[in-house]
Length: 292
Image (cartoon, rainbow, N blue to C red; front, side, top):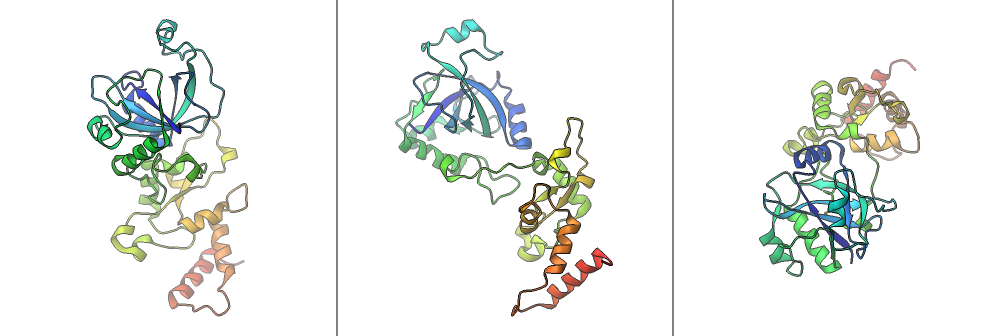
């Protein structure tokens, strides 16, 4: 068994709010009842099956969190309903939902049954259902084709489209993934890299329009509980290369001014062919820095 299927009740779990939370922060955390016979160890893939009178279908993906399951029901479940399950060894596990389709956009049961006939999609699974590796790969293939589109950075795969062992998870500052803050930042600063001046639209044309990652300037150590994001002052557009160099080998990210200085001081590799545009970009970088 390589994954488990768990039910998603859109009413009890406030579906729309969960979708918005995943879109804004990348995760929705919750607790699920899991039968004791299932392998729900940390890192196990979880596929969420929409239940209730709004239709059935594959609605989301998540991962079991690395913490010890506990035997007590979550606050939203009464002890009586918890005891009603057929498996007295059931436990509750914490799950990070990292991908969730909006209401009405679930992958239909008919499509699931055709692609993965070995799973009883129409039946209820109150304490989960184990998924064999071959079936799990078929589910993942469906998710790649019919699941959510890539997020703000299309170079990153949508959650669930690849197995856990094939993905390296990096911690991402959630302010850099806030769509509204990103729009405000780019409206103010433009869509060229604040450090090197690279423009995706200038280089790639229409497909690069309005595409550039944004970088959060405030060090994580200074983010107290009262912190409020100012997208104009706290975010800047940085291309992927400069964003990586801002974080490379340091605990506190380099500032945009430091990146500009590094670029200006680096010059060019011996023997490299230097264009007029590159020379002009270097001149402008030195001009921005001012007297040293």
